[in-house]
Image (cartoon, rainbow, N blue to C red; front, side, top):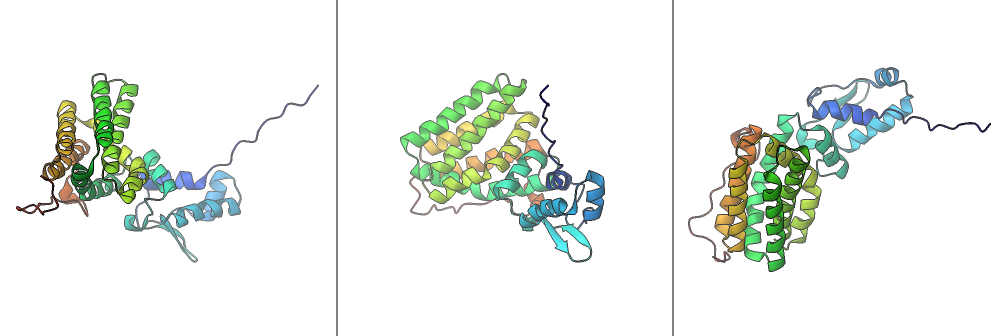
Length: 261
């Protein structure tokens, strides 16, 4: 009789275990995480494996090693949140942590109105079609938003809407940044769409933004993007005044000559 073979179970990932608790708020900046020896005993794995996993968090800027004491969680500002691995962790684990959500929303508030303003000046017919297609997808899946699949599709179309605006700037840095930021933006978008009590009003805010870009009205696009993000913040229960970066930005009363209004 042929011997049956079975694949060995994968060993526990200490980095995944710790990052889940860190992003979830159990361990906050300044807190020490469990010692190597304690992690070895808890998960029944050798010390070299534990060190290898801890190194992943050190390289991501999330932990710092303190000789003779162990590992401590670093301040959020030190985290390499644009690293693909860190953004993937953000998507999976950061939702319960309001401080991280505030930082992401603050960044979006500081960046996306300017992106929308630039898109209103540079968008081509193809760009406008991509924005409109994403918007139509948002509307189609909104009617059945009580279903999990439709909520997910609505959020995917919402993300595609924002990505299309980034691409419409025709700036290679902005376009690439939209891909890097996608997991983080998806997290705020999906949560806000799930919690929002004004889904129809949210869709209307997106429509106003789309129309401002289509009509090549940069100042209106800037304000419309702010309104979209204000709705996201309200759904998440976050205020811009509580963030480190986000704040209302007033445009000059006399628009610069470069505005094509």
